[in-house]
Amino acid sequence: MKDIDIYDFDKTIVPFDSGSLFVGYCILHYPWCIVIAPVLLVAGLLMVCRIISFTQFKRLCFCFLPLIPKDKAVKDFWDRHIDEVYPWFKDRPRHSVVISASPDFLLEDIAKRLKFDDLICTCHNPKTGAIIGENCRDEEKVRRLYRLYDKDEINVVDVYSDSLRHDRPIFSLATGKCYHIVNGQRNEFDYNDVYHN
Image 1 (cartoon, rainbow, N blue to C red):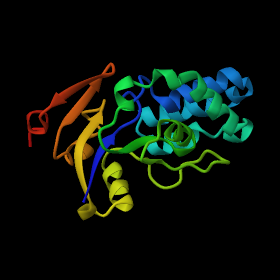
Image 2: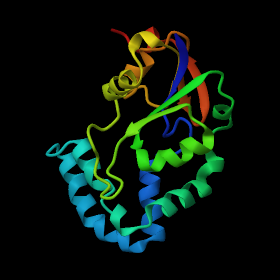
Image 3: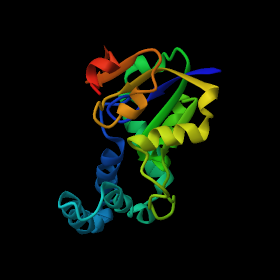
Image 4: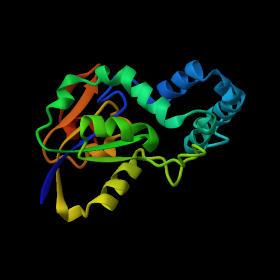
């Protein structure tokens, strides 16, 4: 049986939401991307009004990808932000599985640089930016983990995330420690104290 640790990515390993920051980066560096702003504004309003889901909204967020040199943009983005990775993440005690709702085309570069053992994230069409399948959040993180590993093959030791609200499903897997990440600090907590049944 393999011992693993699970890490969320955004606001856990880095102090920002990488997908949102990348959208802003692209609008700044490739200003013609601003043409998607009206679409995102309308979709955002529809999401707030619960007419469309968050996943449906997110399907539109990266529709500007055909308008930019994606690989160069991603590389330049991480060149700029690599130093913001929290130092404690670089000294990992065991096999690391990073599970994130952020796009695969954005995280694959940083995964190679930081040598994640495994990366599970939201799959996107690299040409159109559209989501393929489900957004990798909440219970979907556990489903995707068990697609990668048989339940009986792994022992989840520690789990790290900034979101107590959305990451209860992965916190519930910890046999060791749960860490709530706040401003880069690892705050250990007891699962049963936080999540009263």
